[in-house]
Image (tube, each protein chain N blue to C red):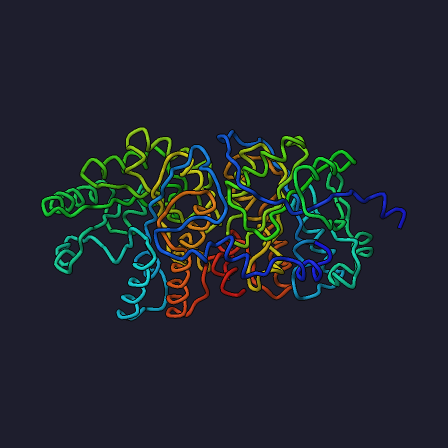
Length: 254
Length: 308
């Protein structure tokens, strides 16, 4: 456990309250965006079928090969609440740790999230605050307003956005965040993970669709889209479900 | 995130969420105000005209042929939603008179920014098509029938690949010059991204005023709303969409096609942009037509709401 602890990076994820406030105009895009792949954690934990440990390890290895710089590998929570993450220790032990890639582990956040809390988290030493639109209700205007408020307290370089696609707004919201200077985005391969609050609704933003947009914008991510598509195809087969990625649907020959 | 069971127990009831975020409680067409107070973000239009292309672009790309009485019921339902423009079938051929004789009060012509696409889609080269359209538009104007011009492949072509903004501008300018009141710029295969949308619009807007332009984005690669947002930020205020995201992509089997009207309205409502459209009624029309064509909706908003 001691060696596992050394490899841990603490990252706190919470849900921001998105309230409308007046805004100012948009800027340019960052030259480089860091994609935080949350499929193995946020994605899988919201999928009904339990995936065996070797398959989780293989998924993470495939995502590492695709070049994703940060892969949220698992969640150290009680197996009673999140059975999908019960094998967290074996997963951390079994994955190949590629040099240059981080494998953070989620610690659940119990509080609601506002700019003041973000400031506090940042001041106690979190290197990055990921602002989550947990139920995907945000739209680009509310994203801009929320970020304006948070950016008064926390430098934009320490912020990430974690948009859910429950109402189809994720990519537009992410675009707005990028225009405001955010350069870290959470997403999930194949858009894994439904929404536990709306049966049948989608959840995470699909990494493939995010990478497609960033590539079109000329923003560097270091991610190989082809390999990412392969990882997505692999896990969808394992979960016996269709991908939620539009790019995958468009490029799949089936 | 952890502790899902207790989080679900303590969260707002989903019905309350629907009321707050979809403004379903205030379901009067044309008098639709968002529940929360929001000032208009700068740089965005105050009002966006939504052009509903579901009955035409949408149904024409669905496998199941819909009986006429169902089409009529579908369009009637859409008419109750506040949508200001609903595109019914409208093709222009050299024998365009039947459309007018059948009661059409507006027509559309379809050009393309790509030679191979023009040849494959309407069987003639771009120049030849423009000459034909000139005749049609001229005659239509004499009868006081407005013509909308479409430019396909504005952000990419399934045969040619990359399309230059200059080519799109050339074709759009031609259509506008011959008398089309509005030019709808179509990302036919959905390959565009916000960058290519911006570059294309920058070029076209040098020749055509933004009020005469519309965007018609396909969601084949999930980019539609992001591309539409970019267009809005540049001053475009007419957007084409299809209820339920009807219509797949004829160029990529299994891929999606049009952007879903429900998802577009959701974004515009959240941005404080007026549309005059009742989202809930659009969702009902979408539910109706999906059952009729036996398919699941492509609208995320519908998926999130109808299963609640």
